[in-house]
Length: 247
Image 1 (cartoon, rainbow, N blue to C red):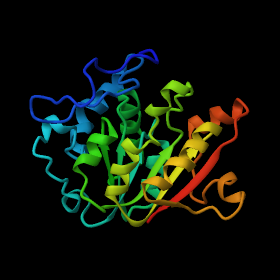
Image 2: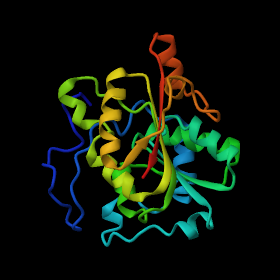
Image 3: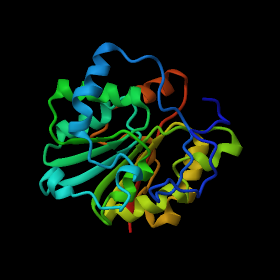
Image 4: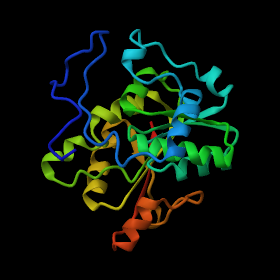
């Protein structure tokens, strides 16, 4: 899919037959042909790990997810765009008392994560294989204790900056599902993404917690460097680690 293509030609604001809002999605749903074992993971594991919010079509009444039934009363974290899933599995293994939902529309990444979950034997992960906005539609208000946005698609062309996650279209619903005082972490190696993040995230009801340069130059104590970060470092780009608190 090219930069100028979307997942559909329908204009934003239209609705599905079920009454669900139509949303343009920019990006890839599928890449290279899946390996046989990845197809097995998708066939055998995805339905069991899905939080039940594949989208508005399957939930036309906008019923909230039952997080108590899903995670048994544990605090719930959210990772938006988990890529290959290494950070998500790392956090789940290190925090067994927390439930973590990962949202990722790229099915190859979903299959990769499912393989990692099998290997790690984590039982505190739910996987939403789709647009994070659809997931946030059905998350209860003030239900998420921590959120991660790690090396999101930078959309480097100026005319595509509105497609970035750090726009009010995404940040306002994220703020709605986060508890007051919840932490929102953003990692990126793109200076202009840092600029837009620092401009837009506070507008949605967040406070940037940095007190000095080390607060955005040094990674978090529980950080696991992802393959995207390793690529950035190989190519000479500098990671930035931004921490916000929901007001």
